[in-house]
Length: 531
Image 1 (cartoon, helix red, strand yellow):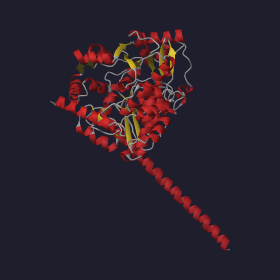
Image 2 (cartoon, rainbow, N blue to C red):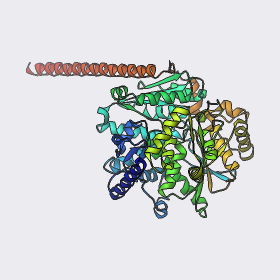
Image 3 (tube, rainbow, N blue to C red):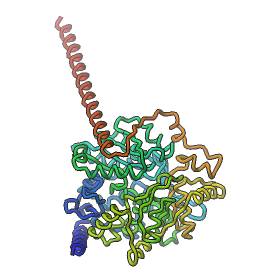
Image 4 (cartoon, rainbow, N blue to C red):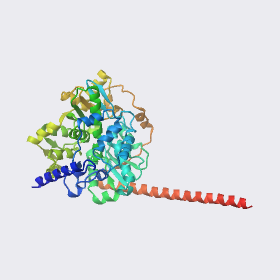
């Protein structure tokens, strides 16, 4: 009965959303079905991040695009295309169209390439270069936008103008979040990363940022431990409300939405060069599932996407799910592609919700069982559907290094160890063709130690990365303890607010001194005239 009621509610929501889609923004509900976490606005889910029932927010309906509509976007620059895609979800009742265009254009202006995410031919297939942003990783696309949405929402009344961001990173999210939030008024940003499990350059990208609202914390543990601390903090109602907690990890819907834009862009760039391509395939190196989930949503919206290939390293929980139906948690292996060293994919819950027929009751049971046993197993029709939605492949360290060497030797093109996993996958599933796009998720200069195992000497790194070794670093250390981390967050907020109050008092005193000084000069001048 509960399942029937859940499906009926979702159907009613879809019908209502279709009626409102012409002039109202898409609303969002939790995957776990809590009534107080349903039909929320874009502003609410961006600022909230994680649902209060521990679920993730998903759209109550997906807007659609026609092939003709996508075709009409072909000549647009990236920021205008992205505005059109995001505008399908976000109407004037949430962000006025002119402001939305401004936010997206400002975000894209942070990239070194005019195309933002260029698409090139390499090795008989296409490569989508997602590393032209401030931190040389794909997460810049979403986190530049998220930072600017945060800024707009705070300026227009959300949270009383205050937000504490607590994020976990396996390497790239941290620096991308920091560069998206540094210096933002009213925002405190605390990023947790596992000690010794990110590359030296990734760590320096985070710890060399001097802005007073940025705090980097090395945690004794793995990325999953850091992620668990973030989730525990969101589930602590008193702490969450006291600090006005927000999320930058891919649990935040805004990140998934922003990432859909480069699937539309790359489809158009592939079909510019190969107009005979009816559909375009994508291979995505992934650990947390957010990047490829964006492609799944783009396909559901109507973008002509063919196959979506999930590419994993030795931490292959996703590959095991899509081949055997086994989402079973194992210990993390430390690999040369650290951003994918994840054994529980936090974004995967969104896909599982859709696989369950948008049934929050089934999803909640699955997640409860998984959290208790570390295992979720599907079979039969569900497994067949999952295999229909995604292909998958696994590339270990030897295979990854082989691809890096091959592409450098044969094509003069360097891949980072994550991007190489995605390229290996298209070879394994035999989809090396000009209608297939491998996502290059980071610049190889961020992983010199790994890449040197395949190519030596390496090309010189970009100047922006080379200069990191000359900058001062600052970071803190915390044990793997949510209570300790939460205390750290509150202390940093108190310090910033105290400093802000002091700065205001100094400014006020300075203005008063100026006024007194000006008054004295005027008085002296008047007295001279009277004489």
